Length: 418
Image (cartoon, rainbow, N blue to C red; front, top):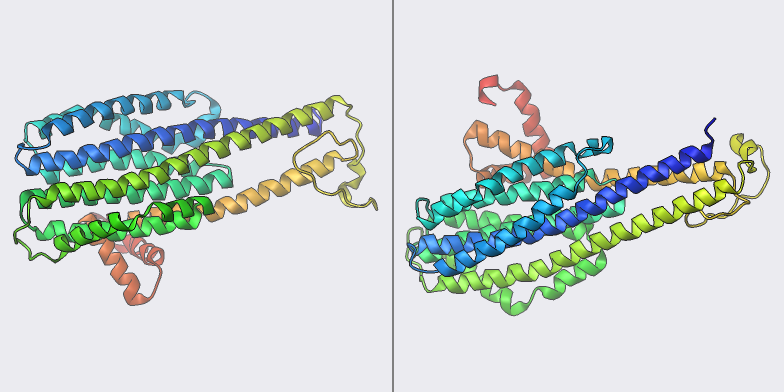
């Protein structure tokens, strides 16, 4: 007959397997972040190339595509490292689905590049293509955060995802502004999109600040240099306040690109620190769990007849044993105490995970509500978000509450209009 020790050891092995998968996932997130950063730069250079009618930035763009291909190989290797065969892979259903989608996008990337090279596509269409691929890569990071079973790791994944999403909005801002300056004309659609992207960055960075560790929040403050931000803000004002259809100085396209790049490179240093912190936490959690497993095994070998079972119904008058860190071979502790401690720890982890995942669930609701408005009202993405925000302000409600109300209304819409 299996003892309580057998099941405690099995539980610890399951925890270790989950942490090992999380460590691989964290490495994948790190590699994905590097590829996203490179693709963001490729997108910006492609916009400059297209907006200049192929007269400038051709060599820089081609060099960047070579760099992206090297990073793409690292991401594919990280995908290959994930366990897709084990029965334990069930929790990764959505993650694996996202990866399958991304692989299709990466396979199609040469087609996008060829259409940019031959200028078959304009800057707006090329930007949309890069956005689709990058958003697919970010969705991989999102699912990694959503599937994490350790609250500390989950918090850092949520912080990292939102920071990466904020940086992606900064990259889209760079691409949009590059196209405007390089074209020499202030297009009203581009101007509105720019304002939407700036607002979206701020929202993502606020969520990052809510979930990041104090050292990483301080690191973000430290890299926001006044001179870089001042130059970027000046150029933003030029783009935002120019009359629709009015002229823009094409010479500022390089200045804009450089200012945005300096801002994004500063963000990348923080993103790298976030990724390093995440991987270090995974290693620490895994080492601690392995140590606890070894302690359990040693205790089991000491003999199964340990005291404490009679304490199950609280009959013992013995003074409670002070809590200790981990599962050391203390012979004066009962199996009951181990089970009770494990149960309390799992409950605490569940409560913390519920708190962390609330942010992810809110994001899902807002995205679904935006999709409904886009389908039903033919809104663009930023128009749908602006409409939700306006409703939230008018009703003095949270954005997520308005999103839930919009989704609830979908139940009474005619099926053909959803």
